[in-house]
Amino acid sequence: MPARLPNEQYRPCAAAVVQNDAGMILICERRDFAESWQFPQGGVDDGETPREALQRELVEEISLPASSYQIKEERSGYRYHFPERHRKRGKFVGQEQVYFLCHFGGPDALFNLETAHPEFRRWRWILPHEFDLRWLPEFKRGVYREVLRDFFEVELS
Image (cartoon, rainbow, N blue to C red):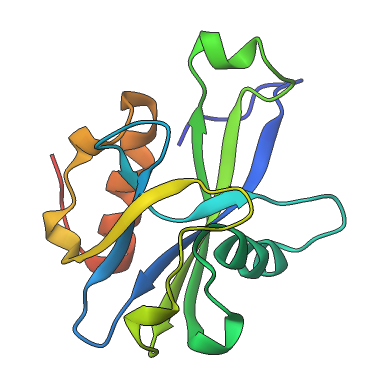
C-alpha cells in the first residue's frame, strides 16, 4: 500500500462484500458504466463510523436492511489513488476503504436497485475466484486483488 504523503487526503469509504450461504459474493453493475462490476460501497459521512456508513450505503444502493446480514469480518487500510482527471473535481487524492465481509441470510427478493438515487443497473452472485479485474477501472484493481486475497485467499492476476 502506498505511504501517505503530507497534505494528501483520502476520502474515507466503507465497502461490503456480501456473501450468501453458498459462498458466493454479490457484485453490482454500475448504472453509469456498462459491464463495470463492483461491491456496494460509499463514503463515510462526517460524524459517521465506517459501520454506520456501511449500513446506510447498503440501504441506499441495494435496499438491504441491516437485519438481513451479519458482519463477519472487518479489514481496513485499503487505498487507491484517483487518476488525475478525478482529482481536479475535489479535495481527495483517492479513497481509503474499510471492507466488511457480510453474511447474507435473507431471500434475494430483498435486493432492490430502484432506489432514490440508483447507482446500479443489475446484480448477481459469483464465486470469489470468478471476479474479473477487467470489470474495474485500472486504478481500483489493486484494492480488489488485495480484498479477494485477504478475505478468500484468491489470487487474481
